[in-house]
Image 1 (cartoon, rainbow, N blue to C red):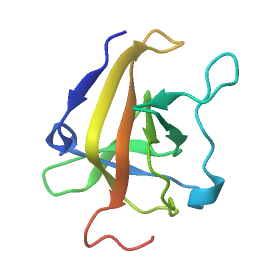
Image 2 (tube, helix red, strand yellow; image 1 turned 90 degrees about the vertical axis):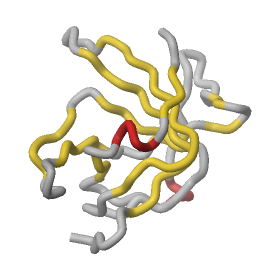
Image 3 (cartoon, helix red, strand yellow; image 1 turned 90 degrees about the horizontal axis):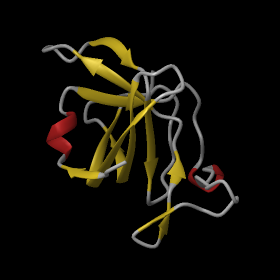
Length: 120
């Protein structure tokens, strides 16, 4: 499948959050079928466990966006129930999920907490 580079504005109606926190040093690398680390621009892709959440005009979560995976190229702590946004170069690869739905594999340079966001 083709990979597209997009701006963070492409995800202005989304935030990303995890119900399980993970320290940067505990992030696991994405691997290929042979167990080798998947690389982007020579850097390992780190699994975040972040879920995509769709927001309404007031910034309230209206639903989880199923079929999105988010990996990052620089390790950061992922805090439990904190909303994050994608930063840096964002690469998106569409794919078909196991249940024949549209999925998106997102690889961002990193993620940062959304301003005004306290751990819930």
